[in-house]
Image (cartoon, rainbow, N blue to C red):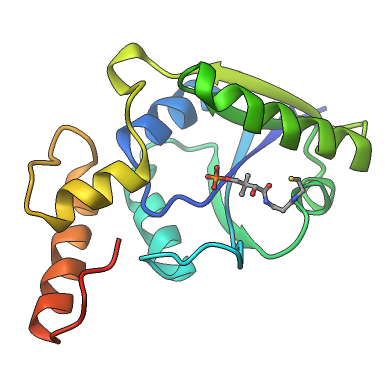
Length: 170
Ligand code: PNS
């Protein structure tokens, strides 16, 4: 039986921290679905399509990765692709409480799907999509935080905002 896992998230946008987790998870599972959860409670900078496009570009060399999006409960998505596992990255102790809450909730919803955590490499333990957006917004250097394709997309997004006279989003 194929070992199938789902790696869910907002990915707004994908960072080297995400890519580290994805690359390592893809070595352990036969198929890895990267799922952009269309979570209505967050105000994203990138559309779901833009986020999927960036993930596709930066994971194109990992053959067993598939990129998808979903609106609804993660366990329903996981069930639909016959995944046995959910993969989440853990950066620091501060992530733990939130991760414990969603893992416990997911287990109540479907106890057949197991959640596995991968510790982020130390070099990315401070990294988040929000921090990258904040730095990019004010013209800081992000080339060590995100792949080139993502850096370009961020610069373009904030440049377009400036040209259109919009408040810089984050
Ligand atoms: O990258 P994020 O924002 O930390 O990811 C959070 C995410 C998308 C994994 C979480 O919000 C989620 O699973 N949303 C889907 C809705 C759901 O299944 N909720 C029940 C478990 S809390």
